[in-house]
Image (cartoon, rainbow, N blue to C red):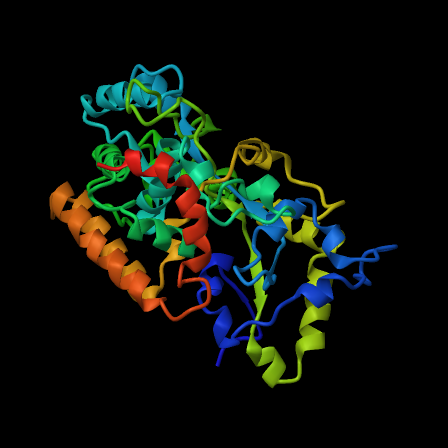
Amino acid sequence: IAPEIIHQNAEIAWQDTDKGWYIPLDEYLEKPNPYVPVNKRWLDTFTNQALVNAKRAPDGKLYCISLDIIETGLFYNKDLLRKLGCDRMPDTWEEMRAMFKKIDSQGVTPMATAIFGLGSDWGQDILFEMLYRKLLPDMDLIPSSPESEAYLGHYLEAREAGFLFTKGFFTPKDPRWRELNRLLYEWRQFWPKELKNSDPARLFLTERVPILWDSSFLLRRMETDPYRTFDWGVAYIPRITPETSRFADGGPATVIGGAAIQLHLTNSARNNNRVEDCIDFLMFLSAPQSIERLAAEALVFIPNVKGAKMASQLAPFAEIFQRRYCAIKWLDSMDGQYKKQWRRMLDYYLNDGMSLEEFLRTLKLNFAAWVESHRAEAGWDFEGMEKVWSERSARLLPELN
């Protein structure tokens, strides 16, 4: 039995909205929030409307509220980098590669990533957008809704990715797909040998690595650790230029964060006759005076409610968040068993358990099974996308080998 209110990424819930597990919030978001003076529409109290609407499921309904914003960044130890002969953070992939080789030659691991190998998960999504950017307007067969377009841009839904797979994208025939995984492997060589270290932040705080890719979730720990003595800053992922890959245009890397706490109402609220009570609690929680107090105490997320102030320490992450959002969240788009298979094979590949060719072939089989498992679902018959594809295939097919 599920709790009445749960937090999870909206993309995960999208896979199960047809099962009746979640309660749409649309009708309640049109009502006034009694905890916000003069408010006539709860939805209007959120600062980033496009972000909130971007969490609408493929069926057009909104199953969660996005209370605040999380973003990732490269935490870097200024003192340690200076000792290693590095006076600034890299702007391009080539600069990063040269810098990391210099650090590595001195017996120091250049960079760690967030817990449980999230760096490879996030890395896939960010590299994807930089390599496919030119094609995304044509690949986006189901445009984002007008109210979410400012945030999502050309975001690929799971069914769009599934359809494009049947046309040869995201397979060994796709040179960008090959390049993405090659670059991810190259990047991984500069991370700790133990990819799934349970506390990589400790490696950073004890000055064993000079750079840590983590989220604003680490900020409170950085600010309150009594043993940290070094000066630090926050930067972002270097851009990939044509010097590194012929598929890149040199534009900035996209962000991977976005909505932080995404609260969903489950069918347990309906079964327990508690829907109205749960909605009242969510309205109270999302009032500016409530979320500001929580955000200030936690010091990890940026409030997404009008009138709620942000802690000054979060400013670097608020600046990073102004970038374009990633074009897909790959692992969140996959169902449980197919997601687990991809994650397992990705770790195996990145740790030299299989070659790039073997990994791409294995991933193709996993993709095929994933697409086939959805065939009976609405939208997954691909009929609607086929018409759009026929108008764009002359531009897209030449991009495949």
